[in-house]
Image 1: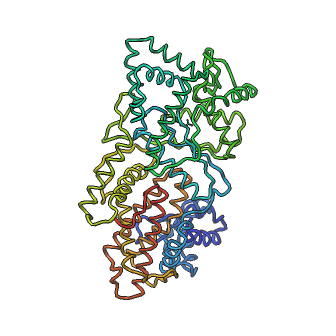
Image 2: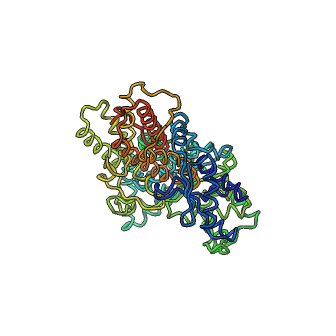
Image 3: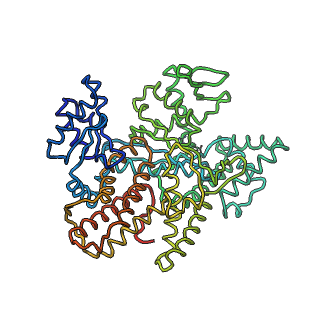
Length: 566
Ligand code: ARG
């Protein structure tokens, strides 16, 4: 929470006898800055004190005006509109933003906590499509946000590396596969073989038996089956890692579903001891009808265990082995019921940390307005999307700034950044539409726009060549346009706290966009380097430097490169 809000809350607390930590959450930023810099709504107080909101507002306005910590206050429509001592706020906010950027954002509220974050988690021998992109990008950004808030984070890639599918993969490979062809393009080739298997099995049902047989062999540890399966995993991970490197994504552990093969029986035993298992049509399930959910299937009638049981084993492993008290799952909205069931079962098992399990779901990714589906064969490969974005970025840079040095790495940072930002700027529950023209538009609400604004600030500071020191710069008269920048910076901590609480990096992306807008207006309206008064020049350079530092922080936490020139 901003210091300004806390100060206002403490004045109101003194006047009303209410708790300032509660009051501070009521304070708003007026939609129109001409009204004031902060607004305190009196409607709730009116209920408590049985007076009219306006009456209370007038009384509070008097108290606040009397305090030398504010420039003034007025009652209007049940609100107290408060004017801040803008020079003082600008001086401290700008200094903090320049010299201790993290502290502008982070309350370190999660210090001492340990979170296991499950993200990306693609399936072996299947394409990592743009649909998987969201989990990867949102997940990595959440990891950075939690770390910035003092939390210890364990990043986990829960690869889909087990199931009957692998029997089919093996059978298909042995029938039609070629080692060299697979090595050249492992995921695509393995996926082609898998699709062919399905197509041919329609006319040739004994193929299905062959697939089942190979899966059985895999389960029993047959050396050929194990070797091929491990090879598919290694090749697939090598392909995924190329994309992760490009996106600057990493994990502390790759622990696929197969890792829990020998850890599920213990879960089943524990469920049985807790009297939670019931029989249903030959399967063993946990009945969840009391919570209006279908039963959570633990063991199928053929004795095979399933996705849910693995997730229960994985959750317990994460808690026991990593000491995680918070389990986060960045997985698409189509698995909402699955996670509700898992979390409920953990709660019924008496796990105290079950209440700290969070499914961070997200909307779909549409590609030029179309839904994508792996099954219908309409696959868009993520590496294609990224390399095309980089190519398009290179063309734009070539036309805008042909003399730029290191054009290639700039194009990479801009192209990849454009794809990442497009994903993160959208409220995560909403669907994301992907169009190259839009994501790369330098004037739109895009990654390149934020990167460009950052580079612009860097360029001004480069030209200022040492005109600005590290000492605090005192503001004497903040213009309305400068204030827009300061007031945005002043709100940093609140955006950050909400982003962490809601596991939603889009709040940081929106914050950065608003800051860019305020800064660009300032840049176009006010001379900076050519300001006549040297002290005005100093304050404007300090404002520029604060914007640079904060944009740098935002870009980094979102996973984009903060370029100094582009
Ligand atoms: N591999 C799964 C899929 O692509 C996602 C796994 C998510 N994580 C988990 N713990 N269930 O659908």
